[in-house]
Length: 328
Image 1 (cartoon, rainbow, N blue to C red):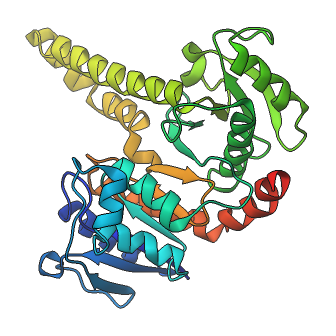
Image 2 (image 1 turned 180 degrees about the vertical axis):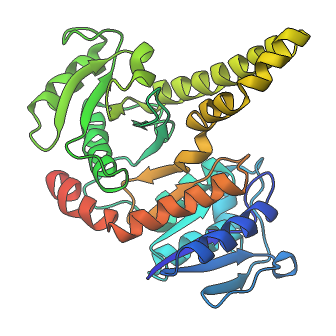
Image 3 (image 1 turned 135 degrees about the horizontal axis):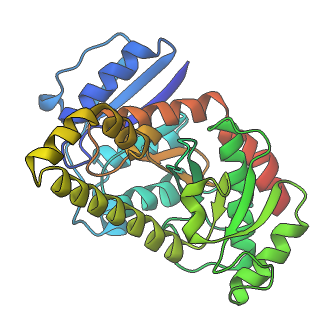
């Protein structure tokens, strides 16, 4: 049985989508137990494997992260993180304020001993539908070569245990594929990653090939990673709008759209972030999953499933034994 703590109040469309996702997850996974934190008056869900904990505060999207965590002790997010810290739950899931959840992860759940800086990891789509693990996407804007090496170690474990990829190809994001390309950070990191026997380092990878299955795990600093992530999101949305505009431009195009409706739907599903779950803060002494703020019920359900798999695979214990020991 895996127990997860869920923040019912976080996200643009909470608590509605959270309750829908939690109900679906409980129905689909008989070995899942959930502790739900939020306003009791807004909870319409009852289940044998659901415990509800009433909270009197809520962290808003505009709240300053660290201050909110310190001042709103009875918020749904803080209480969910505390449940992980206290060992009541293996992990927590929230679609709330990203900075606040990262702060809760760092200051309440705490880091694994030996992990210098936790990294925020996402799984992004590729043309084949396989997807790739990408980190760091914003936990730390600045990084040293040894931090990026640790991200590679964490990402390798994540790809193996959560995504089920045997011997993942781990690559370093750079401006060229040659070993001597890049700045002082990427050059030094390249040498460290090449010398590490704990994962398969496939070399440098360029941003233009990220979605073409160039690697299973791609490592970069949080500043670059966040820029790449937002660029991909923005580009996908813009292409979607342009395609829709073209297909609706004439009667002939509308007929073509009707014929291609199923294929376009399949393509859209392949590129949908909701299929891959949320962002995971790796390197913490517990599982912390950040669902997208604009998540629908399906996306939040995927985040719950992601956290459950992490609990089943004992990913925190594996990271303690490997990354923690290597760097302790």
